Amino acid sequence: MKHARVAIHDEGALPFIIAARIEAAARRAGTALGKRSLPAPHPLPQPSPKDRLRRSRLYLPGSEPKYYINASLHAPDAVILDLEDSVHRAEKDAARILVRNTLRAVDFGSCERTVRINQLPLGLEDLAEVVGESPDLILIPKVEEPEQIREVDRMIAEIKSRSGIIRPIWIMPILESALGIENAFTIATASDNIAALTIGLEDYTADLGVVKTAEGRESQYARSRVVNAAHAAGVQAIDSVFSDVADMDGLRGWAEAARAAGFEGMGCIHPGQIRVVHEAFQPTALEIERARKVVAAFEEAQGKGLAVVSLGSKMIDPPVVQRALKLVERAKAMGAIS
Image 1 (tube, rainbow, N blue to C red):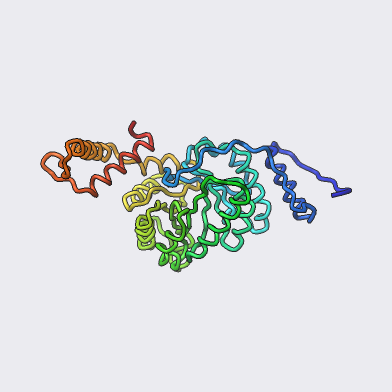
Image 2: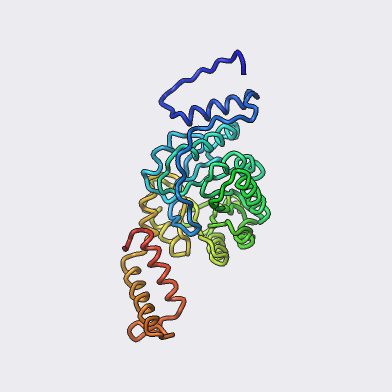
């Protein structure tokens, strides 16, 4: 580029943000020639386990870097750098460069680093930009067919191979239509890299032509299908967001009902929702006490070489033991017990 002048109005933007803005401007001017303005890389966190806690995932607009730096202070299980609904179509190109640089430069602590790409085929352009920076998980919106998953899976594998990335990059499809719900199990089993299955209720209810209510009766069937398909496929079931950020009682009721239905977490659109969601998805003291008694009885029976587990005068069936073991492990992971 020759004879050009760049004016920057700096209000405290960090270097990785400025670099992304300049690169986006150069690309739009047709002068970038495939070059990237990459910040110094921050050390990558440990790879994200497939079955890690995903109680909360905090959405962060992909074009608003002011929310990135302090996001981990709110302690969500995951942050979502969103390239879809929160970004105007005219800013998609700049946002994906910014998200790429964010993955490279920002320390999100123990949060799972997630990117929600755009609906295919536009989402393939997002993948080309961000996968090389090793996000932990890719959220795919508006999935209706398993081939959409396989297409994303293939592209991630190709980029990982070219970039020498050996750590896993998981996939979470979002089902947001009647067709997507009907194909829930085939979508959930389309790739071994799928870690969880979730639902988007705003688009789902719009597809049905019904009003989304606080009680959720209109989406009960769809949410049950997601839970059943996820568990049948051996992946996590994750609920949608609760959109009224001022209604904490409503949020708590929704999250508690979601946990009772078989979901393991949900989305958050405001940091103030995280604590309530974590509390709602944590087993109660009574549940933990009962589960620990079942586990202790199971371990005692195992030590004595007994095939039958009993607690007091009651026989304990194997599914009850497995449920208790899982509850105790989740309680430990949440820090509820040591």
